[in-house]
Length: 465
Image (tube, rainbow, N blue to C red; front, side, top):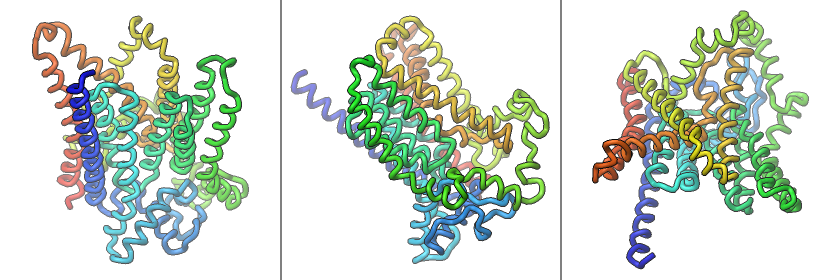
């Protein structure tokens, strides 16, 4: 490579770094704008979550999940039965804000800042993951925008919840996987994986599939070169260190639960008992009209009760209501685009030439299989919960699949764009590269404008502030 090419390469890399930093600032500003636009108590169960922050600010200790001061009068429980790391961080921001104001909206915005930071940090990690997974800048940016600009993802990064922390921890775990596979588990990847697992354990239970698959991927990765070539000392040493870091970060919570709830280290059984005793009639676990209680079959729940439709729509959006027609059309546009790109990906993976090339890359196969498993687990958990516990067809319950999903969506979508802009009549057009660049830029622009348009429509038709 000549000196001129080296200079051009450095200029290109510098430009990319600048664009990436600009994008992170854009994400932060967008999330902050959303968090300031949603009215106090205007997001799902946010008042119950804010009760945890208030308790922490006022009492400076961990609450019992059944404490009457935070227990919801309808459901008979509180969010304190679940991991509350994100609410603990939010309580710090609420305490800081309370020195300057007692305005309710200001305190809610302060509490939401944790989610804003988690969403921004996830964007940083997604950029790093994009550099590992995609060589081309166009494909990389499609992946970055797809994984961070989905309206529901932006929404989760703008109000008080555990989901944003879960998505951030998942991004750390995935980056650690890729780095570990590349470097054969250097110390950076080992530490990152331990941190990611620890934080994930303190986020949301629907993200726990990544804890399981982290163990599987770590073990299988050592066997890719054959059992005879394994350095067993390094295998056990690094595995123990990953576990130790994760336990150091998250272990205290489960010890606290076990001591507080008579050995119930997850808190789920105790939560169910409180709900049964204190919930209003009609909201007790034994009285909920889930599919099992009413004798409904699984296909009936999925199709007749529109579990699939509602989950898909709320995965892309449904940021408050179905009543805003333009938003409904946007939801379906997102769903169709994702489904079409996945179909293209399946067709690509089904081709014999692609399989012959990919079969040589065992590490990539292991990563993609792990991605596939983590797309299935959240869906199964959500279906199980809706069928046997409480009918809750919510897209955020399957949101842990986001980054793996968008990896396959990007792979399929970009393959289709490249094919359309290089084959057929395009093959004879001298400006086909420019046409392809325009197509990619239009896709990226639409992806970034999507959540901005959603915010505008919500403020116009729903929030009115």
